[in-house]
Image (cartoon, rainbow, N blue to C red; front, side, top):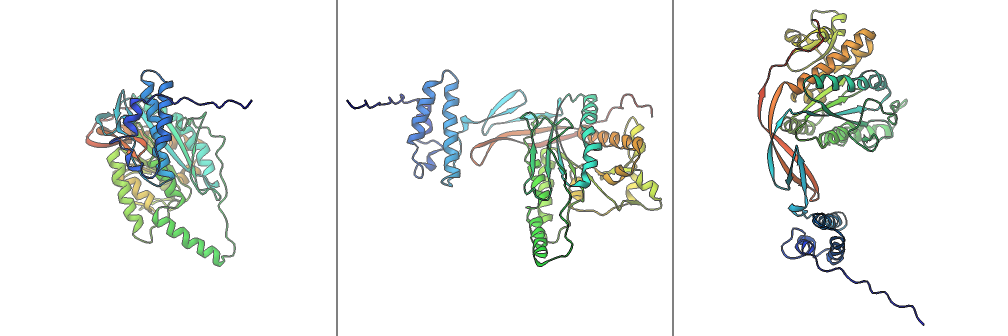
Length: 408
């Protein structure tokens, strides 16, 4: 006789699913384009198999699948229902649309390092950036910041068209100073320029202006990093050749937008870049080689490594000469500092040690010199990505304590 036909019994209608796939649900905007019935059946089954609070979570997971299906297949943007998304802000959970005040600093810091993967940067990464992780962690710990996460983004190798967010044991925030999977390559060399090379140069200029260049994509990835709301936040850019200068006004407009965004969210941008033309009026090359870095207030030299409190040289800033670019302008505009990698490379081991300490001290001071209050709101991006966005509502400067174990 013929095989029997198996009739799979449908799961009972779940209230959680009815609320999502009927009536005035936020998903209804896509019902005319993508029949929700199969998603509703899947929702009923998942809810039936779950228990307790997991029932609501199971229903929301199906709703998330439907939002993604509508967005990527039918190009219909809809929003995940508000009760389906939560943001973790310190010790409390916020639903979509809810906000809460957050004081910074507490005990956390998030550091994102963005490295240009060209051969000229290999020595800087190995001898300066890698040891910076442990040095900065210790300096922040001295200020009471004991939970510090580091992330690593790489970009700019000749065949690397998109930036890489490196993971360590499956975690994107687990960079400890060692990265076996990062590589550094020589830039592509053009011996006899051809028409195609000139066209590529024009393309590069246009991409640079509209924000599609390799550095722009890498730093945009860093700007979008999921910083913890209660954490101190900094991005450390490590460039081998600096930024291209603007030709059209588009870059200046983007610079202003990024500057305001970073200032409002409390993210400090710091930059390590060659600065090969660095000089000081009335001083010799030795004095210029002694410069570690500068911000919008002062110049910081090797001697700062032995001081309990970094003051910098305000007068030297007026005599400092360097070739500026948009990356330097953005860094100084976000209360960050610029450091000379070429001076680090020239230094002997003891001077390199001082350079590292000044770099770490300056980043630490820049992060801990203010007390902030931010208003953090749980929001949706592309209708399905739950994200916390924080905006500073008040700032208060505080006096920095003297460093321990420093004689000077």
